[in-house]
Image (cartoon, rainbow, N blue to C red):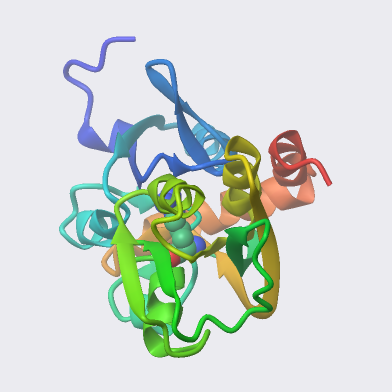
Length: 227
Ligand code: ARG
């Protein structure tokens, strides 16, 4: 449909990093995943057209604060640090940070002295940096989580710290890796919005609540995550 002449507010611009299956990944010319489906359902309820903007993960919050995008939807964990920059919607999913190692590793969750890979700017990055997994020998930051996992499979690093669901997908896609559940750090995912847009935040929270009440949110999650 033509958008010429229509107000900018007919569109809902979603900032994401489509390197995080099953929440968002590229598919052909488009995008698929839990966040994409949720945001399509939210946009529909708001009577807006969803526009997906793919970018580096650590560019998402700047895109929101600068007004280039309306909503960050990227499996974004709610943290106190991020709350200083953006407003978060009500949470829509839970996650934990896990450690991926090679199958022959006897590691039991202490990454002291190891070379550890993360996706730049993620909570995995922060927690390893803070020493939550021990004092690592080096912290290797990749622009994509998948690149960190490939480096691990190739023996360039010893472990990767990443969210549990993408971990499962990446381990399936690479031979010889296994997941250690750290179990210690649980997180909630929410949508990130500008602090100057309370009306949109209220509309989005209402839409999320409706998707929860109708069972649609769970259906979207079940479509991508088989237990
Ligand atoms: N949950 C983690 C965080 O908020 C990782 C999210 C990464 N998401 C992505 N689309 N690459 O930092």
